[in-house]
Image (cartoon, rainbow, N blue to C red; front, side):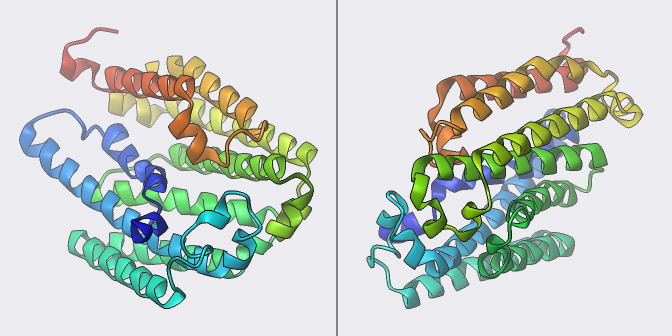
Length: 298
């Protein structure tokens, strides 16, 4: 169980961005001879990123174990608590990395390059970028964009630049939200846990949350109204899902600043209204994108 915990399976939810291309590339519903292979390749890419992410989490926990011991929750992590040795953790991280890259290579060489690039980027984050104000959140967001691009690459579908920028802005919003929740939880001890938190203030992070949320929504609107989107889906009705998008963003912003949740993952997994809003948005997107195939009118 302790080895499963250091893999952080609850954080595998972050890899759902791999499925974006399956939905927006019109590969989710259709003839079984097209859908099943696409679904299988996407699930395999998802598994590769889960393994790669777990390897990075283990490496990060090894690097951060002195700071984690100062955190009220992270001090209970197996590596910080001394339940798993550094040598054993490193070996498991190596196995996860090897399996992730090998699995990606079996799917496609471009996917292998993306997974390997993700691992290198996140290792550099643990060693260097996490100590650099603002750049720490930008690098994390770039990692999420690689997930979305990987989903498109493995299915050989075009992915709109507006969708990539929207993903980047949304993940930047989530990253700044996590920093805000850390400050709310740790208060005066925040800088001792993470050096960059000393450079962030609640007011600065509130401003950053506002800017990134607006950028994400605007890019989503531009994507929905883009000519290529209209030509692909035969409609621009995705724009009418904007109220649900706004609800989810506003609720996340309101809750993450209270310090009730340790980060976005905990909020997403525990807040029922946010889950319902997200599910409704996905269902609405499916109905709009695949309306003609499902025999559903506008």
